[in-house]
Image (cartoon, rainbow over all chains, first blue to last red; front, side):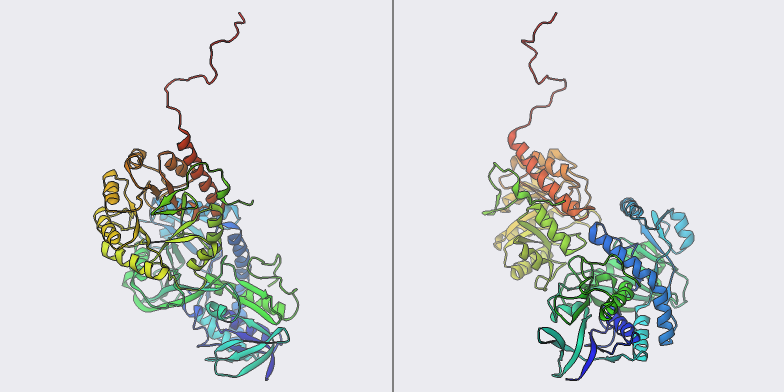
Length: 371
Length: 268
């Protein structure tokens, strides 16, 4: 059996980030993607880097904020290195975000969100509707209340994917598309490689499972698909309608800075179903256009369905698994783009034996994670 | 803090039976609004409930690792609901699909009148209830707090009636306790308060008014600590039910000393 040090299963943003960083650290790595690179959740993702806006209540919610903030902090450096290694100009944007309320009920809910974020010491400001409309004149006059999150940024996941492919190959990683893994190969009580759907086998010292929503087909991990429907809109007159990420009850609008906007997203427990249905798209357009009436004049460029890799507590599984030779990097749910840098750092750390094995995983986020 | 399942509360009264089946608890849980499956599972356990309702329009019951699989794993029964249906036709079809997928003839029937209030559409609800009862379903209809409509639903053969305290997800509690009490007084089937509970006292109040059970979703799933709230509301349901059975004292306008004044020593 042909051998290398590491096989990464899955060529989305998580697997590609790991392959790139591992190759840069001098590890011989082969990445196998069943479809095209980034064809799964990466292709659908809006690319918000929003640990503050997305903060959930509870212990797992707070752990995810911690992990997300650490990763968000490392994104500028990650993007700069990616730009340098790939030659593709960075599409990371630090525009900030507004969280919006359309009526009294939503305003009450926003006050609760604000109080929670203040308790966590997160930078969020309550601003008046008139101030919000100074910042974003396209907002409807009916706006009731807004929160401003100055630091939050976004990145185009498709740039990230394209750049990672170039950068990883440039660093010496072997990347294969349309190469489906049918199962893990075990020998002497440890995972020693993968069996390919076309019948061949590839051997490795370690296998990294980064197969997103499909991870549970290869190992006993609690990862399930959570369907998301999302739209891409384009302003033929170029940028300017909206400058910041706008969030509202039930959705968000992310600006790409070139006249492109992403409007998302539904969240549906429908297994591997990827059909496009009318209701969530109608609801997204209805709600978003109440806030930004001009949105309805834009061109509909694309409607995408993606499958987020959901975990039971919404935290990712990162690090050594129960099985020798198998390392997990899956279950990133809504946060794969945000958490790609920290995931790559943690996994490459395990690969280099810099971190103790089994130090991370769902509900076992390490106390200190150097990026 | 650890919460024991609410089953451990003392319970002197008969357990509740609906449609010939005994329920483990008088609290029925809604599954919507939880931020993670793990939180849902912990809240179900803390609540001690034996019945959890699931919106059939939002889940694929066959999906691996899904909501249904989690609920099965917890040993609770799944009560499919027709949330999101605006016509009798859609609701009946959704109930039939649920029966096929989940092998249950129980259905929580919702036929919604408009998207802003999510209030029931009385006419469509009655039409759907009649059709489903004829088709052999055990029908639990989500209804307005109208005592006449509640009676019509009972007459149509529904196994329980589920009046709202206030609109779904509003957390406004019981806006018309007089109507809820009247429904309870006159119903020959169990009355389940459905929708409107915001916190534990609302659930206790519903039981004191004579409800046989409380259905609760948002108050638990959208609380800051859903597991603690599940425990609190389960305790409140038990408290309200026991208090109802114990018989409250009449209200008086003036004080009445709890110790008699006669026979006090005259200390001059």
